[in-house]
Image (cartoon, rainbow over the protein chains, first blue to last red):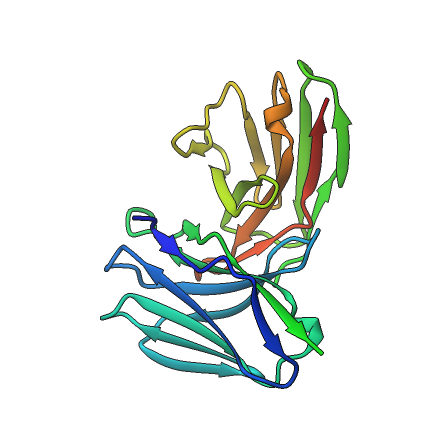
Length: 112
Length: 113
């Protein structure tokens, strides 16, 4: 089992709709969870971090965390073509909290 | 968040040679990390660059192949030694300011021929 699992996609969503990206993790003791956006040819950009169960909203983005189910998700409302990118889920390591492990990423495509 | 720069942004190198990549941050940071991202893949942590002591390497990465320096709290280098085509990748440095969030530099695209 991979430590951080994501569906590789591509996930195709019509413009204006909600894009839902999912991630599961294996280490029950993980405490810090992150979503990065990576455009083709660019480095990853941190867009959301979440540390507590529940929802965290920032503009059009909402991160959701369920530690009991070891599940974290990212919702993008009113999807725009500029949201087309690969989204990486990352989780901190228990053995060394400062280190994070990345999932393989989900490629999101917003179609006009 | 910190502003991070890397040099060079890209390079094409011959096998058997070495390349040193620099990472500069505009403010002092607690933690600096080096990652590799191979084409179409996710990020793999190479090592944690420790200020004033040896870097901490992840499984599968060794100091002889990837020597790292961190002379102060704003600067680090990664050397890719005795390169082979399998080392062709994007190398990224990241920094953490203590709350476990990591911010990435623009990356160095390395091609080994």
